[in-house]
Image (cartoon, rainbow, N blue to C red):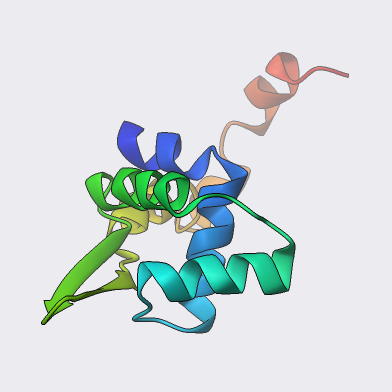
Length: 107
């Protein structure tokens, strides 16, 4: 899970994931072009490639080669444990421990 949080910590990587969510299966060239035109993010292809490597190591991006082209796809699988841990809690847990939580919450 640490690799996922590290990958998501960078705003450029989050923007890359946004772009792949809008249009999955893009090449490095396409991603770079969309980042410039839609977000004014003028990073080098090498920098974007390094960001994609971090996302791929975290499992958030998968690649597929077709000839000399490498296509990038979003993989939301690594986000599922995070969702299960903090967002998909049973409703009975929502009110449990409210008295003790109030003591730990800053005012």
